[in-house]
Length: 213
Image 1: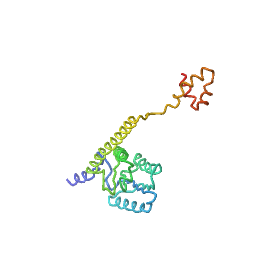
Image 2: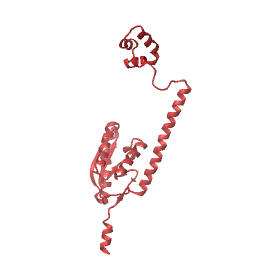
Image 3: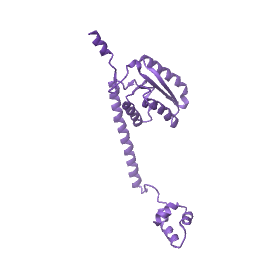
Image 4: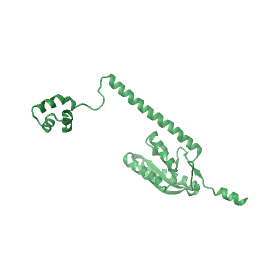
């Protein structure tokens, strides 16, 4: 009977529906990001994340500190995602959700990828732990909000286009070359070369060839 209990206790934990290592063996990737004018809080964030990982008996495999925003920040975040893809970490631990995702849609996309990889995700400030049923329920709500965000953007685009049409604004690419079609054909009929026509009318030679085709 004792042997049976030992065998049951030795069963691996399951995270995101997949068999994972026991929690004490989790390898965590830490991510902290601040604005350029708030760099002094980076040590605070990292220390809090390290203490949280220690309480969960996680091994810290990677720490990423990002300052500012834009392409450089995305490259640093990608470094952590690459580690997840290589199965070098088992869970991503971030300071706050808005430090990780640029929008609800972006946040959801990365969470879905981590879920697919079998990698957990924990946001320290919001106490959001996607390795738990409650956390996964919250992720489902995020999916709803992401779709809501996309629908709002689509509605704004449609409203903007409708308003432009009502005001008589022409939509799409400007017909710069097309406006010269008559002059292009007239010059070509009197023997002016295509290159010279393009130079005189200040349009591309490709546009001239297209008109004369």
